Image (cartoon, rainbow, N blue to C red):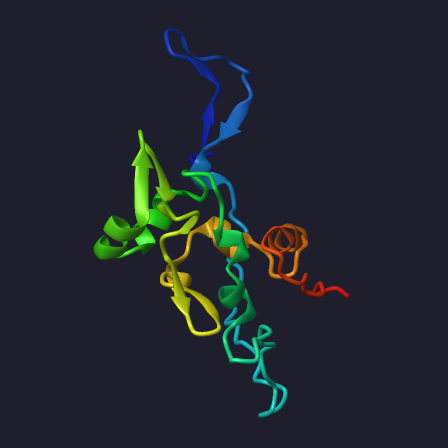
Length: 162
């Protein structure tokens, strides 16, 4: 049995009649799993579309046009993670963020997020595609949205589940 070693004490050597243990290279390995290529299925029809978010009569995205969640009297309202901060350009970091110790927040000006710009018919987030995760997780027409819209005296949107 060349592929096995007898159980041995390092100082005494192999014991007579001691059990023999297999070496790692003598244990048979299971056969490798077959390679599988996963391919996304084709669209079901050329007219299949992704659901769009509601828009205002002026054509603005309802979420950005509202901006109710971007208003707060708190100076440090939306906290940013390192990944959030890293998504912003250097110019955006300088214009829209502020540090309190080692914590980073979106800058608040006049009671609203500095990245929220006035546009005809509402507001627009200047960093919407790179917005913080907290903003990404905020659900349009969700419970928090309803509270924020009520605080801004805006009509509450019907929930997506209704």
